[in-house]
Length: 387
Ligand SMILES: Cc1cc2nc3c(=O)[nH]c(=O)nc-3n(C[C@H](O)[C@H](O)[C@H](O)COP(=O)(O)O)c2cc1C
Image (cartoon, rainbow, N blue to C red; front, side, top):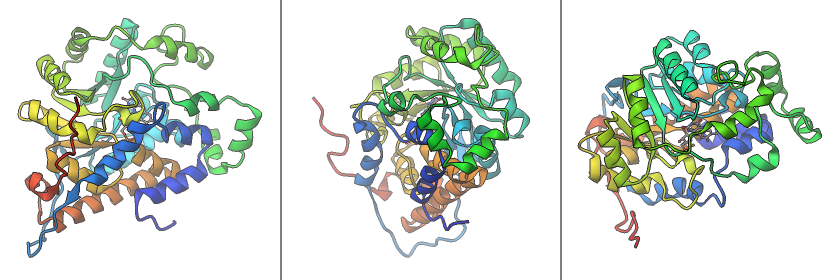
């Protein structure tokens, strides 16, 4: 196994091993990718305060997210088409998360189905839903997640319509990939990936094909996807889905304090400050920059989580020190998965854990739950003065 010391190492291997279409799908933001870039570069603007002569023995990063024990406050974010990055990708990622003691979130647009993941894991996972026009299908999805004993429903609220990623259009992204001269030529250089795909039956959108009306075979899926998302989503519908579910609900995709207050009113258990990894509204501010004002508005009344741009344990430390009770990684685990399957996801989690633990210690803390704003040096104009 090559020596992996950081997430960037996993990304390099991932790029080499994965068909271009799927690498580009993950490694893109919408339009100019300004928000995608700033999600990571804004983390770099915050510095850590080094402290010395503090006992560093007996450290722990263990805490809770929505009342569930976690070995560190880092969940795996819902990522569509994970099973195209690596054969049976969702199952492998869920297993790695389970062994590490962190939550795994399955996307509606996954390749492995809810049932596939439930059969191949033992810890309850979280299920992410998009709000869809087809009420029957929506209800059926929620029932399937209940039957699979999912312990939280993550409702994504920032994708009624799709932000455009230029590369996906140019590459003709599809699952399974369309066979063109270009895509075949590229896939022939990805032997490991290809063998994995030949060895699995899971190559279509497992939660959709055979469940949504008129989608019994994959060829009709493209038109279903274009039509499926509900453009009329509003807070009443969010409340309706919450009631339909009846368990813990996390609202994903909040970037504004006013929306955070609405999430509170609707009774969500947690919100995720997120701009969908820079894949939706290009030009929106980074999640880490949006976090302080949202915490100020609702932080003492609801659990606030964050994703978008986390590539290291130091990023996790910064988000938690500002006040987030949990974080999520999207691309960071996808890099690991595409590089080395389940072992790669484990490696990504190990890298992040080690960086988090060491940075916490060097900032003078032994328990992540005690870490506060005092470990950070934040530029005065970090949040920006916008008019
Ligand atoms: C390839 C890819 C696919 C994604 N698919 C979904 C999805 O199906 N549902 C969802 O709610 N978010 C989806 N997201 C957004 C992630 O859940 C998460 O918000 C984002 O990846 C966080 O940013 P990061 O990748 O910088 O960690 C996706 C992100 C990526 C990179």
